[in-house]
Image (cartoon, rainbow, N blue to C red; front, side, top):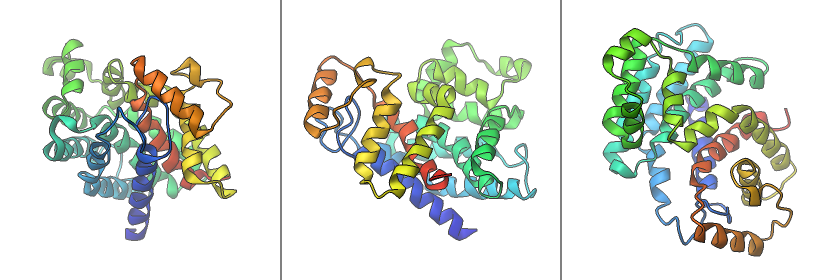
Length: 278
């Protein structure tokens, strides 16, 4: 079990590092960016909660063998703890959307390692997690958002999600994340386009197996993810660094911000390790 956990955490951090520091990704963080200079906070958001992800991964394995269930594993506690740890490390600089997405993602990945086929199992368990409406989990999730995630807390407040409404309406994890997604693009993209993220993960895995350089793969994967978000990136055919740099400067001047695509890009890169060629 320890080997599987270490392997997953290593792959996750490698994927996050590539998603942030790879070659030019127009209007998003990259190693040459003149706009996005605080790249470290994205990495530190996850490293500060890395022990929690190890616990989540263990829970996923336990659920797959019947030792735990989705309702007994303490998913809400994992949400709360990851948000708290990242906030204590970074304060308002923490990219908490990453935590909120990576908890169900990590649980789904671990669970699916013991199932066949991986792809079908991953998709099914991911959306099943979103349907969990255990009051203890929801309370912990909402408390974590209110205490440690300013943008998320504002989204909940604007929706009028009080404690009494939680008790009477009994929302699911997916319901809470959907409320946040109305304001937070990372979350909205993942909820609406997980199947597409999986598709990109499959493609990354196939191309990587052919020996293509990972930074180039990452840039092209980003452009595919961006096709829904930016019309000028939807039909690009010239992938030279010069062209991408010019696009980066133009889009940045116009105020276009695609930094939120780092989250789905990280998921696709991580999944590629488990989906390559399958």
